[in-house]
Image 1 (tube, helix red, strand yellow):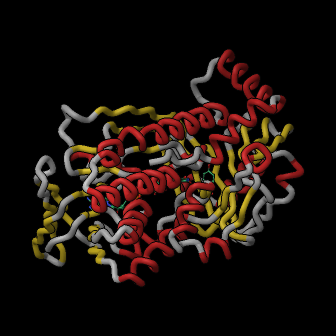
Image 2 (cartoon, rainbow, N blue to C red):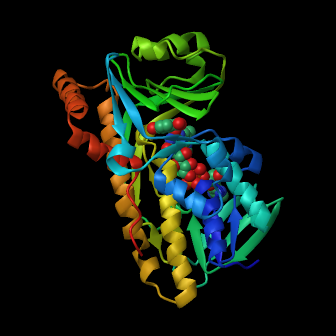
Image 3 (cartoon, protein in one colour):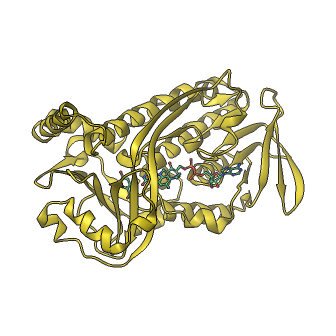
Length: 392
Ligand code: RFL
Ligand code: PHB
């Protein structure tokens, strides 16, 4: 088989890339390890930055999002069960963000791919990248018990943190930056009315977050110790613990219902540099992971893909390599900005088991400062709303 761009992974990064490339008249083929049903059922992120919303709208991918998603003017922080304040992205930046599930984004991307007849080979195993330092790379894989080969001009690794693409970059070239946090998040979905705002809580019992998927569907999270499993958190234990981390007036607004999904995820920050090696590019979680506290993971996948599709579009249109040569540095500027914000919010809002009394006091005074300073709120609002894309 032959294509211009071989894309590894059909998560949001890979599917959006295939869409944007097709709009530049560039042909691609997507290889996915899992079944389509499996990819489409994963419950993950839910906050779409203004830039992400724009990319989806400009590429005809926003019809359902605009119908079912919920726009927000900002997010709320509550602290120690008493003080609450609003980080107003609309007032400071004129920007709103949207709560709309990654599951729905993924469905919308698959539907768009079907409409244009995109080739996606799901359930492909043993994906191996070859000849990345040449101008004629190829990818080998096994599907339906048979070996296959795709010849291409570029390979893009959109295969997430555990994928093969990043591991194809020689260790002598790759630099890795990592931070592992000493707790995880238990996430649940429940058919109850969400709080009016995406609300982050720092409480002596630990962090909690109330978010939304639709008018009748809520997504809730609590900080849990790293060794806790879903089985440790039956609903009878989850609901009182979750509500105890919010002030009384907010807790009273949250109805209880049987949860329909539960998962535990550890928190980590990770960045791989550079995001290009020869004819291989990395995009999304294949290159970087952020703790979910800033809601940046999915949004970074979108900004990487936006920059990369623009760069490949320019290359195929004019032969200029300027943008593809600049891709890694440009993408990494936005990545590090979000990595820093996610790290800041993680430190600000969680209870660290290892924190000294000094650390605890410093965190309290940081929250106090953020609550009282319009300048501090404006700075956080700018980061939370998402930075604008750099011009080409
Ligand atoms: P994805 O979504 O992980 O997709 C990668 C795809 O590549 C496939 N793959 C392979 N295919 C072929 N060959 C191989 N060898 C392959 N290895 C892997 C995988 O099956 C998969 O389909 O990465 P992408 O597209 O870069 O998208 C990134 C986002 O999914 C991610 O940043 C966010 O979901 C992160 N994230 C969250 N972000 C938030 O902003 N808020 C959240 O609440 C939130 N929760 C989460 C998350 C990520 C999680 N993961 C990855 C464990 C919760 C979880 C559990
Ligand atoms: C979500 O809706 O799943 C969500 C919202 C905000 C975050 C993380 C996850 O920071």
